Image (cartoon, rainbow, N blue to C red):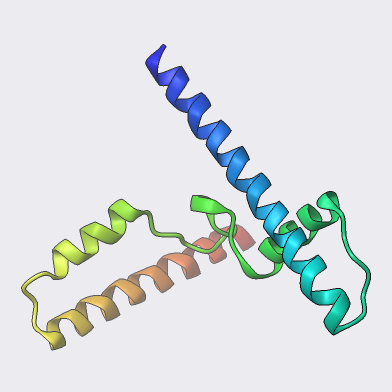
Length: 116
């Protein structure tokens, strides 16, 4: 029961943040754009569409990222920092190069298996 309430709270909080973001976008647009460029004001739903368009063009969708592009979780990010703790600058550079090389090799292998 406690887990369901927690999930419902996250959903409600996320919805409230989205609604607030849309309202702020609409307010900023209507306060700035008509006076600067002369375009018309927008309503709430147009502001929501504008935010979605911006996310599609410039952002990623939460922890999932774009398909085919790796996205590192906070846990993985922390793990990397822990792994590099105590390394010298040159050791860190080599560690990062190895990780990037392995990542590129895995992506190339996945692309090859996907083409077949």
